[in-house]
Length: 127
Image (cartoon, rainbow, N blue to C red; front, side, top):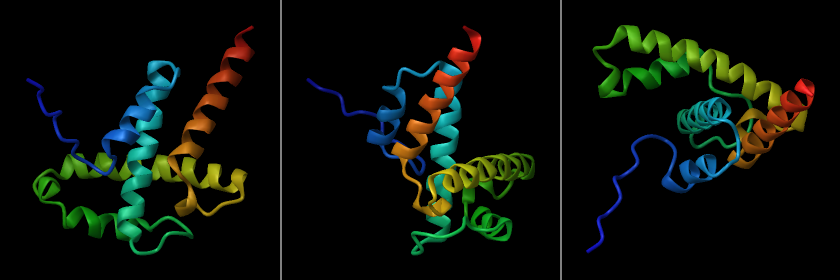
């Protein structure tokens, strides 16, 4: 008898999570990659139906948070989330600039390739 897997909750689907987990990145790098992928997927949800261009603004993030029932009564978490969005947005904008894309055009593959390149660079700097 097989057991159905626990459904994934959040903006990333099971295949995306499995692709991140399948990388050979160190745990810390995989964690950062998950954060970036989660934020990018959230920004894309916020921007819908727009699929290219700049990331949504902080005002759009706030509006999105206002519509999330799980965030309604947790001001501390919301503030932490806004800080995380700010940091990750900057990273995504820089990566998009390097790849000559708009931030909303970024894909999970772009994030994975970037994380792997950064990890290789750090390892070669240790040698």
